[in-house]
Length: 103
Image 1: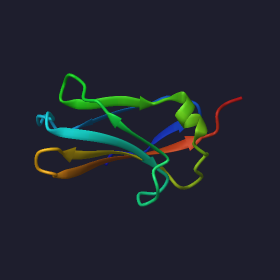
Image 2: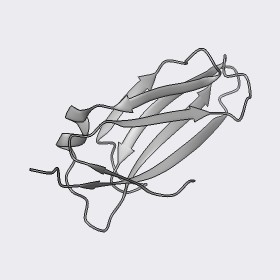
Image 3: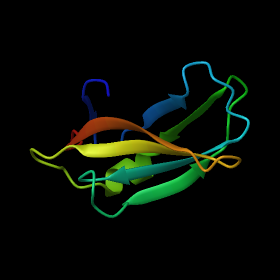
């Protein structure tokens, strides 16, 4: 897991999930945003693979505007990867913090 990203409410948040160069053809990526690692997902969607063995996307400004300013608790943006051939699962977590939008 990398360091913490800080964004403002209403700001896009880009993400990339990959398997360190490994072929992803049998893998499916479900992106989830949670306030705590074990809480219910606030945002969830399947991310289609990009052309370079990764899954790329972003949380939209509408999605981040809907997230509450999280105080001391970070949000977790996680790529939940499932191999459709072997049922193997991997998770790629990324922490981020939401601050108030500038007026």
